[in-house]
Image (cartoon, rainbow over all chains, first blue to last red; front, side, top):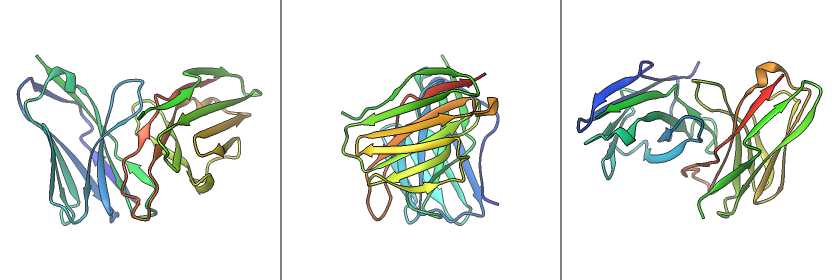
Length: 113
Length: 115
């Protein structure tokens, strides 16, 4: 069955460091992958989209990589700030229908001052 | 305006009640979605509407009945729910194209408690 896994444990880092979050998937051939941020009690907010034929995407302090051979995406936040503390979700789409996103389990990031 | 609004914010209902959740967007998006999210779990897709027509139903029990009256509005009618249906219900919208490669804009959700 399809599985999309992210770090199950919370990731604790110090302010100013780079946070690296992983998203691994099995039994899936996504056409694209998206990353979202979710704060407690709020809806997810879109951050970045990367297509299957792209290796890397950047937006300000964010960088995402996509390796379809390893079936893995890495999400980096450089110069992290306490305001970056949230749950980060990867979401895959394109395998069973272009409109359907399947979300990963999410990783909680805590950035301490 | 990149906002998706949902009402109510909180809803408590008994198992015999009938209630509705509402979602609205004015971004001109032609795809709208309902998701269910339990605590500490990712959102799970329930329904997708494309150009006001039901496009995807993820085998959701019939006690949940979606409706898309026009391109800006999405409703979720609830009837005879079970306590395990208690969750955060999220509405989202996105542009619609053949590639499907568009981000989704989520509302703040309705926190539903079934007693």
